[in-house]
Length: 522
Image 1 (cartoon, one colour):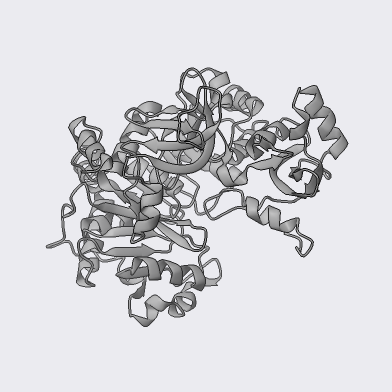
Image 2 (image 1 turned 180 degrees about the vertical axis):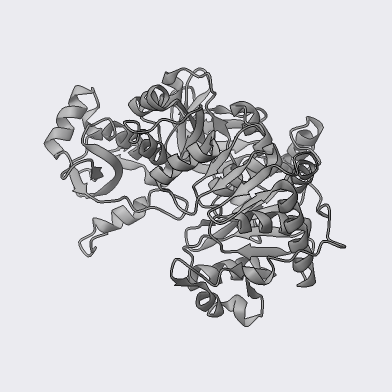
């Protein structure tokens, strides 16, 4: 038995992992809160009873199409009730749900199908003027007869003989999230017990209950939207309000109309809400987990004082759901100067190149070990062994430091570190410093080749006005802040918007590529 397998036994013995699935919770809410609203999108409002019956009827349709225990059902759909119904229906049929980004086209779809061998791939006919039927008809899955429109399985109302519980064990796979690899796609497999632990732990820490209302404005095909929108609300019995795309004014209107109390997203979304403070303030308290980038101190203050919005930092990966989270009663220094501290039962450490644990304040590569870590990469054993090691630790390739109180500060990706004249520069640290400047709306930092120093620092800046600060102005500001000179950007590039991945992370490689002599404008 490996250390990892021993960890699994310990998680069950200590109660971190329990014998439950999400559909068990929804069945309970349908029984106890059946006439209450469960999900709201731009076209529909469904109650818990209606949601449960639709999920059961759809599960029956999936079974008729041959979906059984362990089979993968991929869905490429925009946010809405249909995603929620299908997520539950796949679980009731015993399958594994694989949500696909709406941005995927034939190339990505063929990668996913080649990796996962999905039993069924469901898509809309068209959405926002995109012909998804034509896209999927050109895919490899279509040639195998495994593609259908979502409408062909949704809409059934026959529940006679439909499953009332999932045949899956809690240790079985629940869903697969796709993430980009060095060469092609990877599929991260999450189990029911691991996913339920993460939801349960985070809900307890931020005090989310069925009295809350969850606004989901990030894609439900991402881990953020699926885990901290769909599954979060369904687990807690809270109404889920779906937005197809982010629009701060529309979000403010929904928060007012539906009584929204929780939202999840990057700090850019929080900034958009704070920018409305001159004309809008929610009637009640609002909580938001901000992950993926640091929370600027002034924005945190403004959010709390002007909107009654509590911003909570967090850190996680597709490979492990939240490992650290801020606490509601944390002082502002921790909320803005860290990404939070470890969830109960989770161990996170920073190690040096020799695998030794770093002292507080010293940066190292982060490794995670806990009941929040995924099972591995689906059908990719070599990659799984490299990342999800038999000794129980998951390798993140992220760099971070811990303070004396155990609070984490992520400083960047291992491969994104800039080495200038033999000194390591964290892009994230420089980006945080740039965000303090009054003319900077957003920023990303990369290295570019230099004969003398090996690399120099370039800052891509989204200005608040017409022009970004100059190199001289940035240098003066960094000097005033007491920043070591080797961390000062030596090149500034104006950009209208930072290039992002489908999961909302900055594509630093695209920025590096843009600096090459052959590059065209982004």
